[in-house]
Length: 251
Image 1 (cartoon, rainbow, N blue to C red):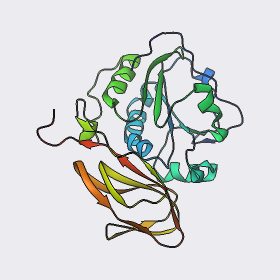
Image 2: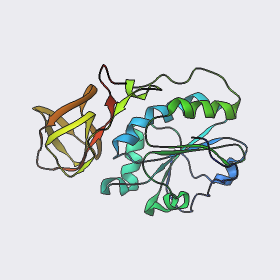
Image 3: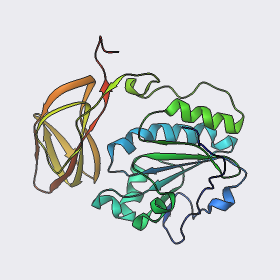
C-alpha cells in the first residue's frame, strides 16, 4: 500500500541493540538508497513464509542500491534470546542485516501492528510503501523497482496462494498451546520449543530447534482434523493456520 503522505521519516534505530550479519547500522547513514525493513519473528509461520521474497529481493536488488533490513521482534519466549535469533538467521540462510529488537523498542518507535510488517522508504528515507501480513509481494517488488528505476519481471509466486488475485478463504484462528481437533486452512504449523519429536496425524516430526514447523500442507482450503502429540522434552506454544486457495466454483 502506498503511503498516504510523503513526509513520514524512517525512525532511527535505538542504540545498543544486537545486530547480525553486520556490526551495526544507523538509519541516517542509509540516506541516498531505498530501504526495505521488515518486522519478523522466527517463531511465527507468517514470518517464515515471507522470507523467500525478502531473500530474493536482497539478492536481486542489493547491487542496485536496495538495503534490506530485518527487525526481529519476539512474539514467543524462545525467540527473545539473541543467540537463538542468530542461530535462526544462520539456519534460514538470511544474508541481509538483522537487528534483534530486544524489549520491542524498535516496534514501539514504528508503532507497528503485527508480524510480518514491511516498510519501504525512498532514498530520502521517507515512507513510500508498506504492507502488513503476508501477500502483496508483486506490489512491493514493483515499488522497489520504481525507486531503483529498474524494470523486470517480479519474483514468481512461491506458493499458489501468493499469486496476485488468488482467492483465499478465512482460516481457523491461531490457538495457543498444544491443540488437537478440527480446523479449516490451507496449512497447519506448530510453534515448538525443546528437542524431541512431534507426532502429527500418525507421522513423526523431529524437533531439534525452537521455531515454527509446518505440520500439514493442503493444495487448497481444506476442512481437516489435527491429531498432535509430543514426546518428552518438546513443548508446543501455539498451533497456527495459514490460508489456502478457494476450491473450484468459488469466485
